[in-house]
Image 1: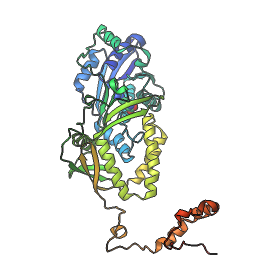
Image 2 (image 1 turned 180 degrees about the vertical axis):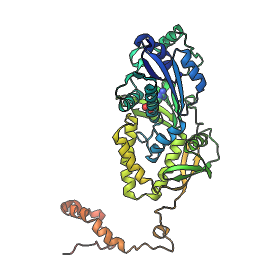
Image 3 (image 1 turned 90 degrees about the horizontal axis):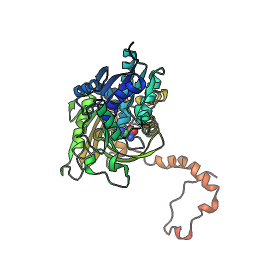
Image 4 (image 1 turned 120 degrees about the horizontal axis):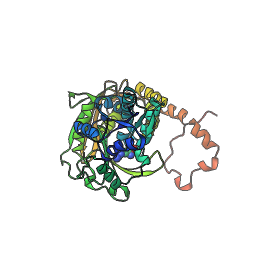
Length: 420
Ligand code: ARG
């Protein structure tokens, strides 16, 4: 009789390769490998071949770049999602997508469990486990690296013993994760948050110091809160992301050095490169400032913060995410227009914006001829607006008496008085 099957999220790296014979040996499971292309720079044919060479009974590869952009990055951009105000959640956003693909393959293959290569210290285990539990509560989740307690050297030894090809040239001190929305880097010297990240830790961006001395301008057109064109060329969203990564990365835009609060309570130092995410979020925010009223902008910021946190926390497949996205979607109907960014030595600065739905009215804002704002009305407005503050102050008469030095020498303007 055939062994039960487990569907493993397979990257082609050492951990997930070692997991294949380990799952067979320790759990008696046949491994079906699944590799989801979310824009990481790997040769998928080689990854597939390596899964089979490592003992997988089947190996699936899915190109999910478009799905990733349209179903995960698009809502994140509309929500300006930045965890702790700085991290665009590139790694975090890919996990529920990979989780969904694993569950789909598990159903097709009749597997009883899914597995991933995450350790017990990070966020990604939380995201994979919760995605699985939400979509397929009956499937078990196995995380070999949480159980096996092997050092990297022991893993290499285990791999050699089991005939798994070990790429000895990949002796980078860093652990990285890449997709369309960014590159995450950790480990090595980065574990000391008091030390500046060395230049070699970066892979997508040039150093702002070495970036061109001449700034570049790029104009992004938006429709309903999503980019539809770059410098006049209409492109699908995932291609806009790729192009912005190249353009902004060449000017050193998108480097993030963050001591972040992990779900499991650990503070960790993470370095990210997210050129497109940073540039597009900044452009999107600029368009929202032009089109949305103050109260909507203000309330949306609190929704954005909650939304970013739930993505970080692995709660993608939950009703809170759907509900917050409903609010965000309702704010995006008029987010149409163009934003120009200047890319220069690590910064992406908005220099121009326009929209057919702009709330900016020159006749109200101008200090020159053509002013239609009725300034004389402001006094009455401020009388009413200031009533609570005045009432409050009247309860503390001593606190409001002017200090001698503060007594004006010129006649003071008459305060607006309440009727006797
Ligand atoms: N800390 C980040 C997150 O939780 C990214 C971790 C990615 N993994 C890596 N090997 N750098 O989303």
